[in-house]
Length: 198
Image (tube, rainbow, N blue to C red):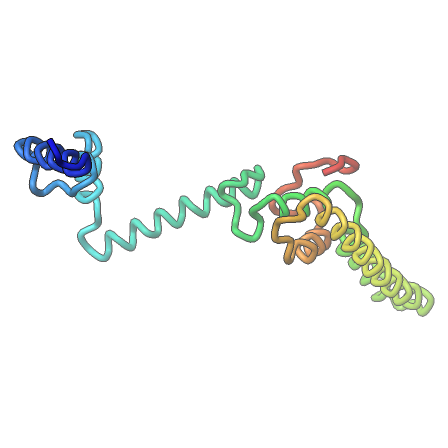
């Protein structure tokens, strides 16, 4: 009658604990976690049973997993599926860099065909053709350098505007390396047409 309210609540709580303790509980079940469903328990048992018993089986399974992963990666490079792309090609910044390069003509992508023509001209035993081949080498190299500088400058500007909070490190170098490849040989395959805005 003259007790404080806190003491009364404590006494009630003690009685509640005593009545709850009569419930049966599995002593092996971890506290605070519900018992798993039968289907979950069976799938866990199957995964334990499926673990390889010998080293040979483990290496075979590892090879198979690696093969399937490489196949997925190869398909992703052809289709542009972001989930299975290699780490260097993943992310919105790298995707934008690829699309930026693929949407325009680059001087560097024509380097290989021009190099073949220049080599053929330089092998001909005519002095004037060899001089023209040498000049063409210089012109091509200067054009590639100028185009790469302009592309890098524009790309940095676009990346800063579109992805201010994301890591843009290495994206410009990645794009310039892509611009050196012929469009048909690029991986991941181009997803935009020339002239489209990324």
